[in-house]
Amino acid sequence: MVSVPRLVIAAPASGSGKTTVATGLMAAFAERGLAVSPHKVGPDYIDPGYHALATGRPGRNLDAYMCGPGLVAPLFAHGSSGCDLAVVEGVMGLYDGASGQGELASTAQVSKLLRAPVVLVVDASSQSRSVAALVHGFASWDPEVRIGGVILNKVASDRHESLLREALDESGLPVLGVLRRAPQVATPSRHLGLVPVAERQTDAVDAVRAMGDRVREGCDLDALLALARSAPALPDEAWEPEPLPSPGVRPVVAMAGGAAFTFAYAEHAELLTAAGAEVVVFDPLHDEKLPAGTAGLVIGGGFPEVYAPELSANEPLRRAVTDLARSGAPVAAECAGLLYLARELDGRPMCGVLDASARMSDRLTLGYRQAVAVSDSVLAVAGTRLRGHEFHRTVLEPGAGETPAWGLHQPERRVEGFVQGGVHASYLHTHWAAEPGVAWRFVEQCRG
Image (tube, rainbow, N blue to C red; front, side, top):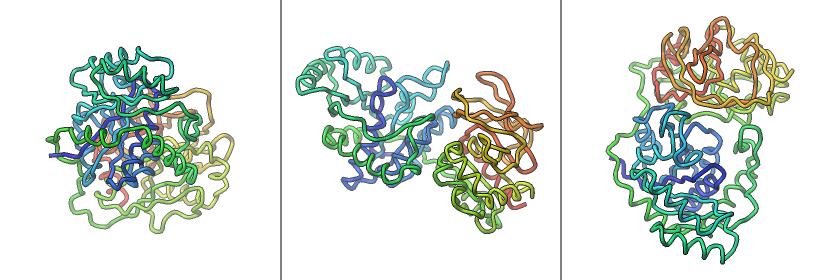
């Protein structure tokens, strides 16, 4: 049974203040001495970085599309084990999910799977009594979604607050916090959203502290904690990465990190470790060598386009990556990793493992994908089906090699990515918890 107190922070729409409230709550409760488990609905990598900074624990994603609804509660239980409180930041509007698939992957669905009370963050900047109608609509739309209270954001004055509270008195839902209209906390954005924590360091610490201060001053933390403690126990067992039977030799798997490669699900390293690997993180911006004894390489997502000059200038590491790939060693690259393995990125030389050229584009490619492995690779046997996510503003030409990595089935049918020797490179982000055999296969290939 899972009995961790928990809250889901949701909103009627994006831009209402979910990230400020969720991150601020995490920071405020952690400051009280509580062990806070941070979670994010959906595939986003950036918000969990701020969550981790606020709590001192890995930010973890709960994605019912990529992992399936049945894994949401077990993954939550895994991440929140031993904690006093869990805070789950929602995605988009409360009832918005995977396009054309009903409630799948919505914050509402995740709240039901976790049997967690929802706190609705409402941008009240352009309304007064109408707020009650809005809240009533969201609270009554799905009787299985339990909205336990409201936090009003961007409130202009004492008079405005009084009007909002008077209206909400009729709704029966308590006001758990009021945040006044104020200059936005300094969390700069660019082409794919917030700038990741790893790139901001001191500024990110200051931003998280400011969010915590705003929430602590404007919210009833005791009432919010009481609401979290009202969540019933879950009958689910925690997910755990299954160890590979008779692991034998522990090969070194190098995993790219640092400011240029910030996108990684915490479970991937855990799965590789359980499969018998020794996972060593390195920074392609600064390290001129791969970790000693590297037998396999994992390069996840991030922003290589922002750091193309620095990545290109690190010629010793580029040569080391190229040599490793040409030796036939297992290399798994997603999105940013795909670009790093290309011949060039925006005219800057990259590793040249793939005969392809990458450039920035004005077009955003975004959305969930259904994928099938086109051929055998270091990650999967042909025919393996996974669900993934694309999120980039770059274009790779060609977009697929002679042996593509994946056949995609939505929104249109196409092939993409590269399987070349021991290299598997693709734009597609996947969550290996949905298919643990990926990590097992990769580590076994690293053993040769």
